[in-house]
Image (cartoon, rainbow, N blue to C red; front, side, top):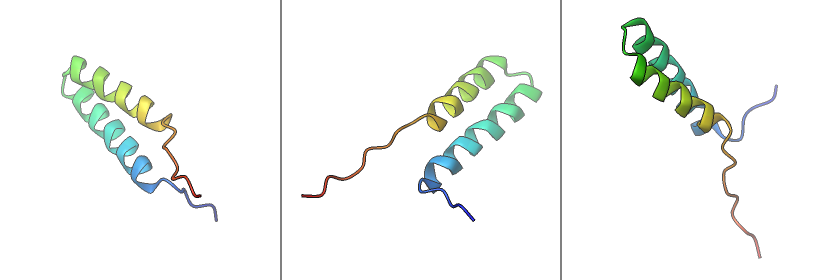
Length: 53
């Protein structure tokens, strides 16, 4: 079973997505657009890796 190396990024992306869906259903379209955009950007993040010398 493959496990993600970036668990925190996956949790953050899912929280943004679920919150965006809930805000869309409640009629807050500007907030939902912002949250969907944040979930898109957080899913495409390339996190820095520590340099080993």
